[in-house]
Figure 1 (cartoon, rainbow, N blue to C red):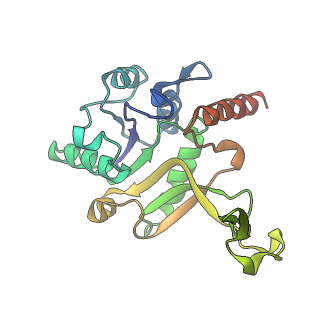
Figure 2 (figure 1 turned 30 degrees about the vertical axis):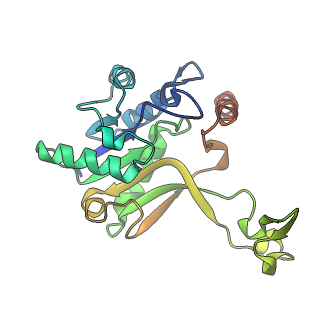
Length: 230
């Protein structure tokens, strides 16, 4: 199947300035996502969607394609990943380039590897009725035992689980924020990654870290260096 990797890398970031090309273990953060996509060997095209000339030049230097810059309408704080992917696929389609499958990869995924993408892609193709595959990680603590504030006190969100042992609660998962594999026809019909039949690709907690704040960045780099030393 023809396949494209789309790495979404907007220029501005409020909490970490220039986050997508921020130095991480000696390299721009986006380098790890591009390297994983190339190393997987499963994509015909590896494209970076950005509104930023500097990011575009760095991406091209790392081996990715940047055939056009993102539109202004899809470069502000209100643009969604779905909007960006739709723009990329429709722009390419208008030029005569169509792909059967695609993978949205975030530029802030330094733990992602080509091997993981290759495994995920193989598992995804085996499920012919699947529309999307999402990278997920298990909650480290059961969310059924969560508290919420009530005035100056706290209370269980689900009091019915207050005395239930953690090991007896159903395991739940959340988006790992690394990649989404999907069939392009299904996506363009719904304009959403979260429609149809969704498969999980589970990742270990040691290889997952949201990078939204400077503190997150420090934690991610510590985890990365520890994993590399093992």
